[in-house]
Image 1 (cartoon, rainbow, N blue to C red):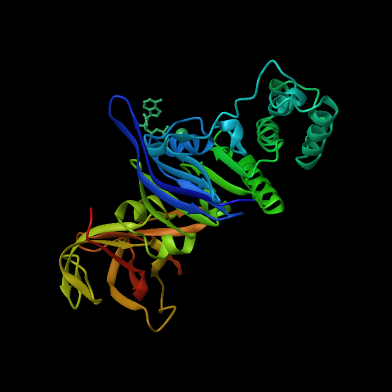
Image 2 (image 1 turned 90 degrees about the vertical axis):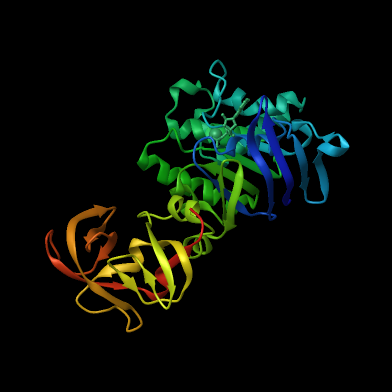
Length: 352
Ligand code: ADP
Ligand code: MG
């Protein structure tokens, strides 16, 4: 397979929409990269530039050491010569074609001989467990089956790179989980360099070797799940990535401690205004600390207890400050609770 190297990539739509601003990334050979960002952040534009369906305004793209795009030098390889398979957001199956012909379509375009088309379509359909659906029309398939057909169509040419644009957004929550597992194990089996774009952070947890977070056309951070959770580059990343969502409060660095007004947290902090991020999983209500390192905060009032997934989370209130915390002992609304904080659970930001 092959790596994907993107250098100084810009896309400006007329009259003046900056969809991508100086994107730089290297996707390794065989890697599964998930690009995560809110709606309108430039994700679709990015993979369309990789596929060759969109011409960037500036920049370079390499597949391995093969130059694919260099706008300054007038290089822009047509999509058919890129060895890329793409799965579109709405799957974009041809409604008037049977599954067989949908999958066969990219091969027909390439004028592959008929017997070979027959063989390749059957092979990929076997691999994706849709061989018994080849005579149906897309409307006769479930969402999950339609998605497999779209993936089969993307893979039938045996591309070196697989691009997926929000492939799970049309699936209900239960199907999404099995579809993710399917895509992940397929990617592992084929070892195909893969870029999947999504606005759903759970896709990233489930699939990514590395995650690239984008906002407003600007790459915010690239890293593993742990790197991004533990050391978010800025408040956007901290708030966008992490479930349950991070607590983000304003405070003041005082050298020896962080001042939240009614709460003073004894950790080293630069002087001046700061944003303080604390993940709910790094602050907890318990009878005794989980580790002797953990800091004991003044007791706080339990304002409410809710379940986020299976984890009970309390909203704890001091005089003004409110923080979401995990709960390790039985508390109810109105209780005064002991609260502990993991020492490395404090993230300080100068931005925002
Ligand atoms: P995402 O996939 O993250 O939702 P897009 O790449 O679709 O984001 O869009 C990024 C930005 O570019 C948005 O502001 C969008 O409105 C704009 N945009 C996308 N396609 C076009 C186009 N063909 N012409 C003009 N603006 C576009
Ligand atoms: Mg999109």
